[in-house]
Amino acid sequence: MPPIVGGMNIKRPQILSRPRDYAIAILAESSREERNRLLERCPEQWRDLVRGHVKALWCKTKAYQQYQIEKRLGEREKPTPAPRREDTSFRVSDFKKAPPEVAHAHLSELRQKLARSGAANA
Image (cartoon, rainbow, N blue to C red; front, side, top):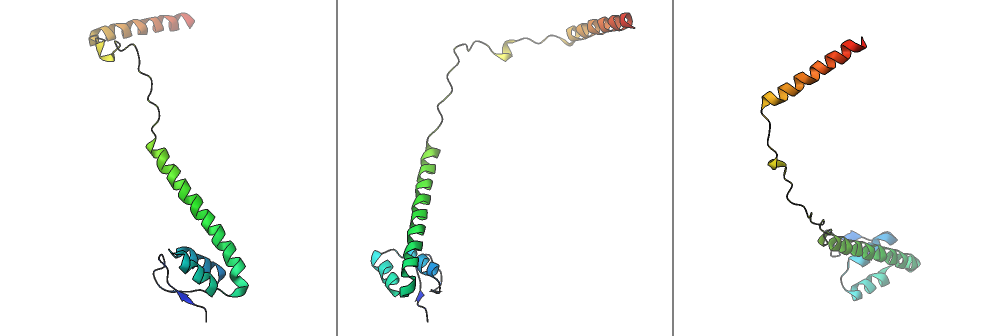
């Protein structure tokens, strides 16, 4: 019967029935001695395969950890601020609004011009 192992990240004991199960259990252990002990308990015909799985998973884990570190560092860095404008005297609020009568007068002039140009073209 295959050995039953419980690791740090495993909630309940797991039956090790495949090489990947051994690799996951080995990586879940915190101490090197426990990892070596699990590798020795592995069936002889699977040891090379389990070592390969452990190396591949270890590289993936380290790459992911490095990615997380770089991501956190990138979040801390802020983009450079935009250059300050030299001319700060311009303000939209400085312009005075014209009374509505002025706007109506301009609109009526435009309508008259359009009516004349339309009558001339017809």
